[in-house]
Length: 296
Image 1: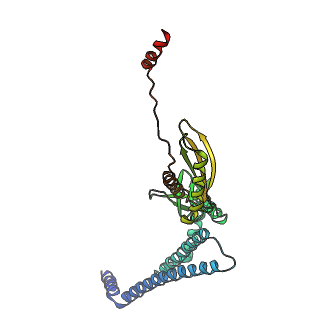
Image 2 (image 1 turned 45 degrees about the vertical axis):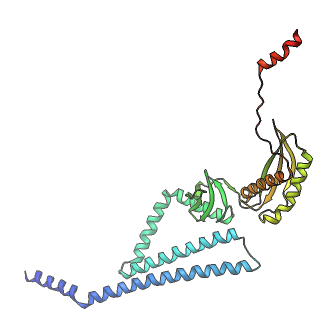
Image 3 (image 1 turned 180 degrees about the vertical axis):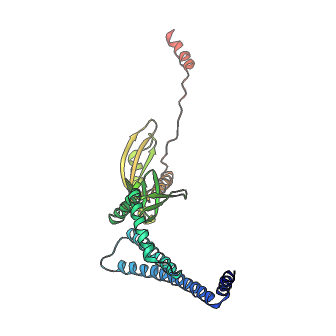
């Protein structure tokens, strides 16, 4: 009975004594200090990474803006992962845990998980080749795996693609088997203009050609003067003339709309008519009435 009382007294003395609270305060202070230093390292590291890419941009071995944005985000994420992992290990050491045994157990568990995580390994390998081969980068407009949109992030395991309506698609890199990248080369805007059969086709072509010469000054996204290809089709009530304009990547939608507006306004100014649907009424009764006198 006296032994139990002595043990209880020792426990109370230990809990209420200064040694426990000093060690807890020291550990808490150490953890807070580790977190603060980690945040500072990440913040300073990201700024250093940004400055490094700025220097690369000005040096002789410059890289494209697309690839720069991709690599900058990838290196910043890798730095964050390394710092957070190191901080986590240091916090565990604060609790006097055996880190060596813990890492050895984690290595064996990771080896066992790796045999079953084939998809994860495939995603990482595919992500490496996507970045290494520069298949697409941050800011590119791509179509892949039934998804179309702008690339927001390219990582070693997944990539994020933002659609036109704002939704973000997260795709495992292993599922990216075929990619259509619309942002590497210049786009082409194709515009068909309809002219009425009653109008002078040569005059209409000359008016549009003069207009196309003026447009690159007002629309910097045009890479060259748009080309008037000529008559594309002879439809039921209209002559279709095709215009093709080379423009910067993903600017063909805006340039197409601008060409349609400019052509419509210029044709109205010179009095050239753009056809509208027409309907011819045929009356069989009137035809029979008109043929009766001749039959007599």
